[in-house]
Image 1 (cartoon, one colour):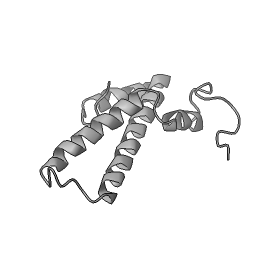
Image 2 (cartoon, rainbow, N blue to C red; image 1 turned 30 degrees about the vertical axis):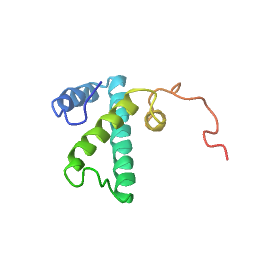
Image 3 (spheres, rainbow, N blue to C red; image 1 turned 120 degrees about the horizontal axis):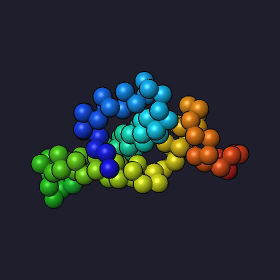
Image 4 (cartoon, helix red, strand yellow; image 1 turned 90 degrees about the horizontal axis):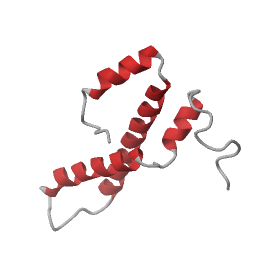
Length: 104
């Protein structure tokens, strides 16, 4: 599992991308999905009235928890955002079934 705050991993990821390895695109898409989910969780938390039990001191721990939840979601099957990015950027064409992804 990759951690969002581990900045040493980005140098290796950049080297993989420069070398043209296809795994780099998938890894970047998963990290972007994790950041997207993290921002989504943060926006949902900001829209609430807050937690009266812990007050302001619990904010740091809540943010750390949200970061870990977002990383875990993206490391698993995710929400499909990483698959869409890989397809759109010309990576793995078998990442998701072909056809209309949005069914209304």
